[in-house]
Every structure is written in structure tokens, then in C-alpha cells.
Length: 322
Image (cartoon, rainbow, N blue to C red):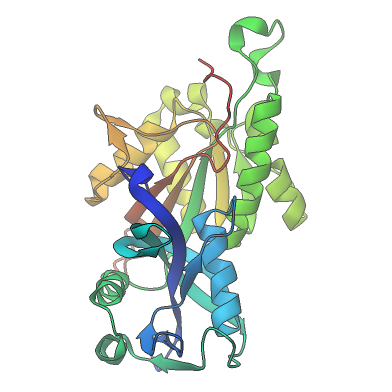
């Protein structure tokens, strides 16, 4: 989920295609009526100061629809001009797929009516072509997918300044701040397992997520740099086995692993990656890849259908470490 010319955007917002199982294999999606504008739209709203798009999307869904939700894949960014204090300004809305959990709708200040509709019918109700485009992107792949959050460890002390075992090199102060921000961001996806390369800095990056879940951080030697590069095919197979186990795992690895394993899966399954620069897949410290997998009926195992990159939710003001 990387975008160019971010500085042009004056207003940031986030929303979702909120869905629930319908009859049989079908799904229903929520469309909302906003009396202030007299329109029908997908639920969305502005980011609070310091808020990330995933966190804002879940909050806005709860406030507008009354439903708790679990985010899935990133769908699309819609940009358009709106009126500001100094004339027209650019607004960007990041949309996700989101499965509805517990809750029920009650009319509120923002929304006075909610309808659950099949996507084909919802498309005819929506007031804006941008929302229709988002809904069509949602329908491009099955709604129910397996999500894996692949995290690169946060900033650690410089290697040349650490005299001990490199496996025990800890996060820096900036790294702990990044880890705290990641801890908040990943809640929007409701992970249920936490795995990590057996490096202290990797484990520390996702330790807070594990504490929130009340679980231990499982070690994955094949997803450390030396474990992966001893046999990349085996390392990739291990990641796919984690996906096949189901749930929503968080996996923390290293910069020498993530670009290759993400690129390998994308090439294998025909997924275009937007976060690639000079042929290298993005993987900065404290960032994550949101990987979405389908499980084909032919029994061939998980197939990557979408991959989106999130930069660190708390970039460090200090120079990047080598």
C-alpha cells in the first residue's frame, strides 16, 4: 500500500467493503446512507491525528455501522478533490476488505440507514463511481482469504557497535517505538498466532502482539537469513505451511529474507507488486507485507492473490541504520 506524491494529499481517510456471509457461497456487503450528503456510500471516515489507515478503517466501521470487523486485503485508494479552508484540496481514501463480526446497526449522526445487499445490487445503489470501482475490486477474488502479516524487525542497534552475539542484538529505542506502533496496527487484522526468526530483535518486534494474544512467540529458524538461504525452496515452503495451518499469523523475519520470499510467491502466482524499486522488493525496518492467500479447490495449496506493503507506522527521526 505505497503511493507516490503523498505530499499532494491534504485529507486522509479510510474505509472498507464490510461483508458477511450470505446464502450459500454468496456474501452481502454493507452500504450506508448519509443524510448530511444525501448519498449512499461505502462506510469511511477521516483519520485521527497520528492514526494509521487500518486502525481508522476499523474505528470508522464501528462508529458508522455498529459492527466490529476484521480487516483483510487492501483494495484500492480513491483520490478526489474536496473543499478546504483555502479552496479545493486533495482527499485520499484507503479501502480494505473487512468481515463483520459482532454488532448491529443503530442510526447515528453520520448514518441513518444501512442495507446489506448482494454486491451486484449494492453496485446499483452506490452514489459514486469510485465506490463502485472499490466494490468491483473486492469482487475480483473470493471474500474469504487467509491473511499473513510478514513483518521486518524494527530498528536495532548498529551491528558494528555491538560486541556480543549478533543473535542477541536488541532493538534500539527507535525500534521499540516502531514495535509499539506495529502492535497497534496489526490489531486491525486480529492475528491469532505470532512466529519469528530466532533473533532477539525479531522476537522483540512482535513480543507485544504475542502479549496481547496471551501466547508465546514461536521460533521459525527457516525464516532467519541463514536458515532461509541454506534452502530458499524449503523456507518458502515453510511460509506456505504456516498459511495452510489457517488463522491469521504474524511472522517476523529479516531484510535478507522478506524481499526474496515475497518476490518468489508473487512471481509464482502472478501477483504484481507495487512496492518494488530498482528491481528490489521493499522491506524497510518496522514495515510489513499484508499477504492474502486463497485455497484452491484442486488441493494444490495456498496461492497468493494479493500483496500490499505498509511502511513503518512510526518512522524513526534518526538516520537509517545499515
